[in-house]
Image 1 (cartoon, rainbow, N blue to C red):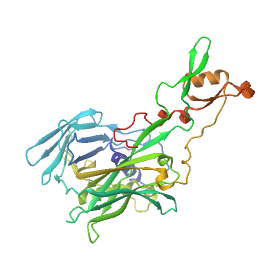
Image 2: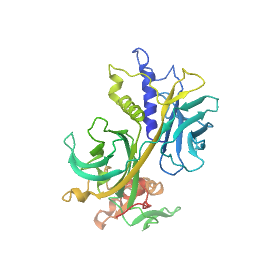
Image 3: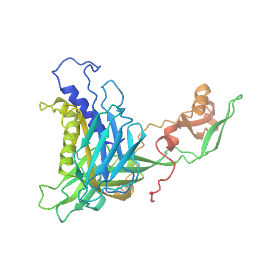
Image 4: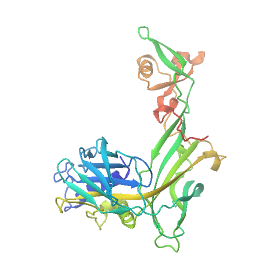
Length: 392
């Protein structure tokens, strides 16, 4: 599910919470209105476009409920109709691959299983403006923290873009600090004979990929030219472990409409925790999607038609801080010598990893030294499959 859903869901919960007078807090939600949440974005990329539908949920519930069995389609003013089918609960993917085209109006239409109909206003694809440059720079942020800033330069000489949104996908290398080429196995269950053997798979070097969660907006409407220079999309502290070895980031730049920019900007304001206690308490606001059966019904979401460009960069920690040691592993890695059932269960349930044999003088404490699995097996934190795009 798209990251924007977090902000949208938070908005509805916040709206419900602030809608009444201040009273003693009750963990259970008594008055609750189920509102459809629509996360819809189509771009100028030729692909299976995706739309996500869910419902707001009570504070005491763990997650949003999906909106299933809906009829979802996008139509344009060229009489084309793009049908979306439900792949997973609440996730609707276009049956055919398509890309939004310039100078064409697109409109989203949704009919729920209960017969409620929702439609967006017609939206047109903004001008496609490519990223001029994506680069990393050693910087000190406003909190006086040294680190690496991920910066974007972009420029539209015709001045037509003006409103931008960014997201990113970061991938980093993980090296298990207490990896050993051997692992412990129980060779004989009856006798509980345990011995070290060569590892069956790669568990020293892994990779993890994480998507951004914040709404990152750029606006040049008040500038003398349509240019973003050294626009920061990510800051990584010098001691952040994810840049300890090799790091890559894929940044996507979306050119969006003014209306979309206002919508995302409002979401950013609502999702700030300080707004809960603000005297200027926000109310419900609409996007560009409205109900057709009942004009008083609430719906949250924005049908976004955006042009997108992307770039990727790689760097190593030593490229910026050659004198530094690798940033500290973010988990404790005590070396222990368990015995008895503690040792057997650690091997059987794979909660520990072999580190070394004891020397004869301390063998009485236990024959094997072990560490927590997370310290000796990188697959706890990532995948041992090298990403297709990875470059060393």
